[in-house]
Image (cartoon, rainbow, N blue to C red):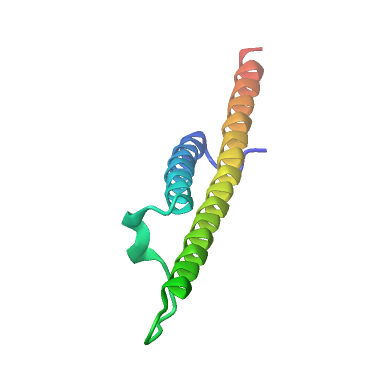
Length: 103
């Protein structure tokens, strides 16, 4: 049963693919501790850090960021599956309608 049109399903599928790629790569960069992402990490403010405490805090922040990106990427995968289903449903509905009009 189609819930949205074929063009909307296609647009959502394309956005989902982009989201999967973007968030998957960002999660991978976070997992590999990319220095470019250090400004985006949420590290608690402390007046004095020791080197092991800071390293442990950065490690936790990188892992959390990577996990959050991968979870969001999986949600985009769910959206992609829903969009593909809607695309297929619209295709079947139009195909059946064309057959009914033909005969």
